[in-house]
Length: 378
Image 1 (cartoon, rainbow, N blue to C red):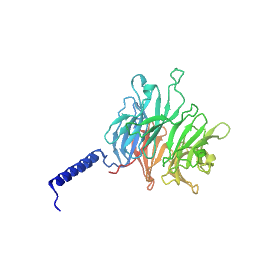
Image 2: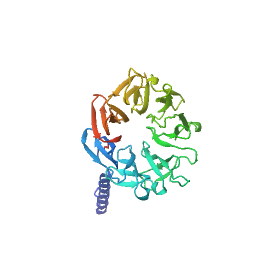
Image 3: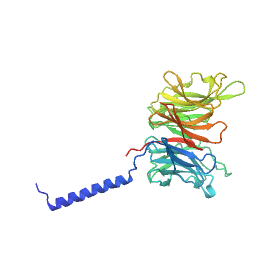
Image 4: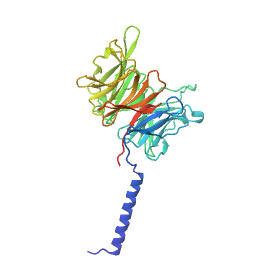
């Protein structure tokens, strides 16, 4: 069958349209990028800004924000393309903080909140795993008008990449406070520290029954802790007495399904556990701890990995010349990111441990608050 001139013209136009769409998608699709590490620097001199570095190429560090008044904290998006960050504002509101959104691909920045204009601080953004929601802490101006800030609340931003995005308080009551929001790996649960109750509140967006929607975990150390990848367990900490005149921090494991609460460490009385990071497989946890007993005493926080099945403890980063914090496994679990401060030194640095080989590499000096930025595959 022979095609008419009209058929050929329609086919040609259709082909042009398809090629145009494909070309447009190619233009907006970010190029592939390796797994990277973000961090804040410099640590000792304001303003602090966000930098990115390929951990296999420490000399590749690039500054990606250029705030005149500094970045307070930040969170990379799950897909590795964006960074939500809390920026100190200039002018009359220079002491207030707004949330901004950086497109790592093209360097574009857009404002997520208008907190500073309202005399409020908005900080500690946390992404849901699908990228469709950001939780953050907001402190409004106190109604007393004395310049102080009201108690912190958890607010949400839905579809943060949309021009029609909405931001609103998670709870409409005046009693529920909240800070340090953390999503579970599956996005089903959101945990935050509830100050008025002195513990961690875990909100289930899809509970089996309405009575399971909220769990409260007593924790008086002021920290939310870490939710497991499946969202069913939480590691947080409590303050306990260690002798007659001292206190220590004890890591605890809360099971959000059956309601149990247990000491995380088998020898909990001999350590001061501060923080935890879940391995992506959910069977292991890296923790920072300081031994307090005389036979194993360590000057600073060291990093160990605990196998939850048999309670075995494996040293990961143990160097008495350093104290450690801000630990996080890479997405494949093969590397551990850590902030290290040399005791007696002047500034923290960012290091990466190759767990298989034990090799530790310094990827940034005078830097802090490191986080993984996911690889982008085009």
